Image (cartoon, rainbow, N blue to C red; front, side):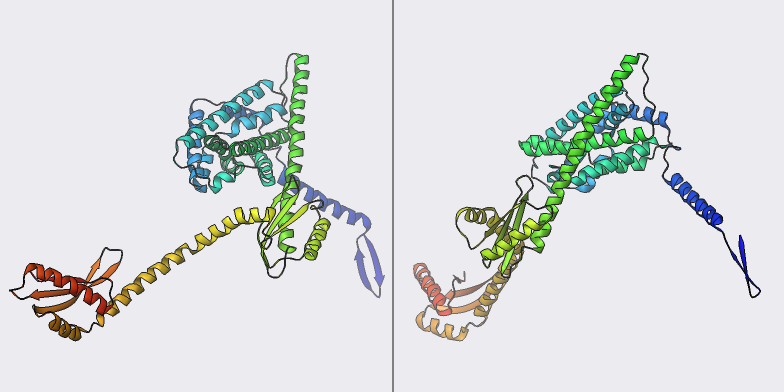
Length: 478
C-alpha cells in the first residue's frame, strides 16, 4: 500500500500486487461456479448407468407387448392426424433401449452387449413395421395426413433434435437416480416411433418412397442418438470392458473404433448435406419473397430442387418483360448459397409448351380447388337466399289475387257452378316451405260427372293463365 501527502490530505492507493490478487480471486470464484454448474462427472454413477442400459436392451415378454400396443396407438394417431395421440404412444414406447445400448457398448468395447443391442434393435424394427403394416392394411382409412407426410423425409432439424435429444437422454441416465421426466421428454422429441409407423403405412399402400423416406428418418434418429451416447460415455470415461485375452481385447478395441468411425464419418457428412439443403431452401424462399416482384403480376407457386438446383416460379397476371427477368437472374447469381442455381419463370400469358402443361395442370387445379373450398359455403348461402326469395315472390303473387273479378268471370262462363272459393295451402317437407293456391268448386246437383271433370280442366288452365301461375290445385267439394 502506498500513501501520498498533499496539504495535510492523505490518499491511499492499492499497489499492483493487490490488484492482481483481486483479479485472481475473482477468476477463481467464477471458474469454481462454472465448474460446479456444468460438471456432470461428480454426480454420475457409471456402474449403475451401464447396468441400467443393459437392462433396457432386452426386448421380450412385457416389452414386446408394450411396443405392439404403442405402435397401434401411434398408427391410429397418425391415421387421424392427432398429435396428442402420437405423443401418448411415444410415452409408453420402449424404443430407446437397444439404440442407447449400441452407443454405450461401442464406447466401452463391449462386443457382447453390442451384438445383443443390434439383434434386439432388428427385432424391434421388424415388429414395429409389421404391426403398423397390418393396421394400415386392415384399416379403411388410408388417406394421407399431415402427421404421416411429415415423417417421410428428414430435415436438418430432425438431426439436431436427435443429437441433443440423445445427449439429454444419456446425461439423464448417468445421473444418480434416473430422471424419468427427462427420458419421457426425449422419447417424445426424438420421435422414433412415428417414422416406423410411416414405414408400415408406405408398405401398406404400396408407396416405396414414403416407406424409404420414413426408414431413412428413423435411421438418422437412431444413429445420432447412439452417437450422442458414445460421446458422453467417452467424456465421462466409462470403464472399458477388460478381457483376459490381450489379443481379444486389442481386437475388440479395434472393432469398436472402426464402428465408431463408420458411424461418425457418414453422420457428419449427412449433417452437412442436410444443412446445405436447408440453407438452399431457406435462401430460395427469401429470394422469391424479396426479389420476384413485379407490379401487376402475382406469384401463385414456386418450387425448388436441391439436387438439380432448379427454382421454378409460376406467375399470373401482367406479363413480366425479359429485361426484368434478366435482372432477377443477375441477382440470383449474386445471392449467397444460390450461385449456379437455375431460375425458370412460367407466366400465365405464355400458353405454349411446358408452361401450358404446368399451368393448365397442377397450378390451375390447385387454384380451382382452393377457390372451390373457400366459396362452397358462400354458394350454399346464396342458394338458400334464392329459395327464400322464390317463396316470397310466389306468396306475393297469391296475396294479390283479384278474387271478385275471378268470381264474376267464372259465374258468367260456368252457369252450373254453385259456389267458388279460393285459399292458400302451406306445405313443408322440413327442408323448404311451399305455398300452393287452392280453388274449390261446388257444382249444382243436376251436373253430370263427365261434365264436371271436363270443366275442372278448363278452369285450371284458365286460372293458370289468368293468374300467371305454374301450379294451382282445382278440386270440387264432395
